[in-house]
Image 1 (tube, rainbow, N blue to C red):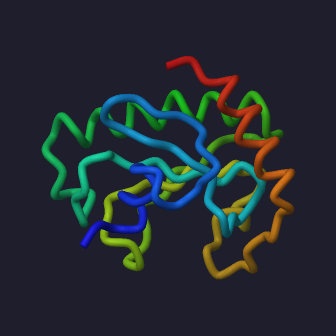
Image 2: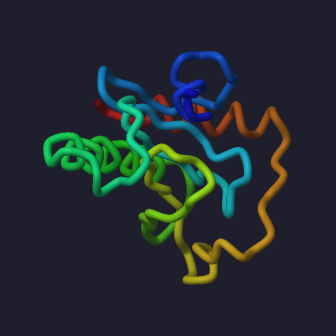
Length: 132
């Protein structure tokens, strides 16, 4: 059965898409820790990030760097944190989280509930700021 991320990539589940190329896909986390919290996934469905072949793993990070640079242009932050965490979705992914303080990347924090309009605005602005 396809993972929820594969269903998002295939357009079966809606998302706030940030960027896409032939191998990778980035979209806003719908339960963000902070505004601009983005997930970056390979289109190839592999459960564990370190089971990806070297070329795909390296490409994922290069793609994530481009997305992070776009996020930085739109969301005021000191840095973009990168986190590989989670067991809930069996599809390799990285979290890109705008960071102003270490507490911004604490996954035990309450998640934001942003209005749909704000999520759409963030996705659009970040998408336009990315140079692929």
